[in-house]
Length: 75
Image 1 (spheres, helix red, strand yellow):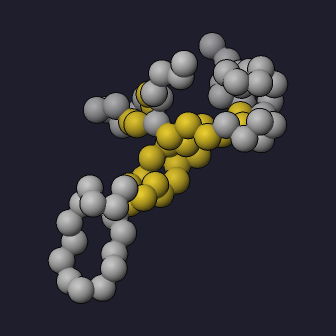
Image 2 (cartoon, rainbow, N blue to C red; image 1 turned 90 degrees about the horizontal axis):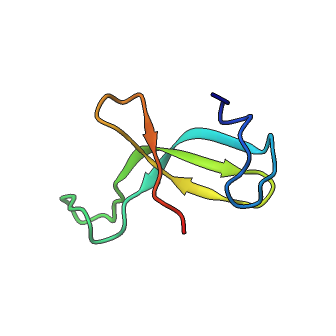
């Protein structure tokens, strides 16, 4: 099975342009509650698949065991 780096991009089909990294992704405003008067933002660490050729950026989720990444279906 090829690694992420060896796989072709699902959008532009370029090879050796994909990378997978953990990033802090902000939750949408209004979807969380934090006490206090100062403006705050809540974020979670999520896996992000990106392509350096076409600018693809897919935010995924880790499954229950924390070892496997799933991404939303593109279409």
